[in-house]
Length: 109
Image (cartoon, rainbow, N blue to C red):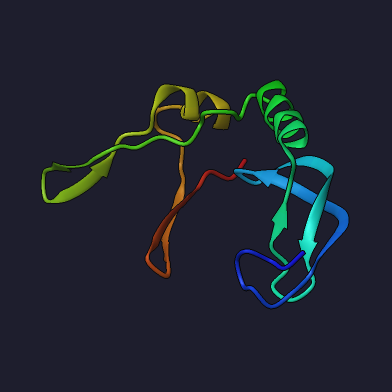
């Protein structure tokens, strides 16, 4: 079967290493494009990936938030469940930097 993404490669059975928010979830069976490397999982495998993410406490951690003004600076609120997952507390030092058009906030131990 041809890849529906690049339309050049063939889909072959294989395994993919799945991560979510930087947390390793495991290896899962998938169809992988020989040209672009895009992977596709069936509904049963997708459910297993979701269950694994829920067990690890990372399912649903992606949140939309707004940038607000505080004095002369801008601030981003960190939702409680994300802060809890990262063990962030008020006053903790973090490192913030751009990565292309993304904003990265690193909370090192």
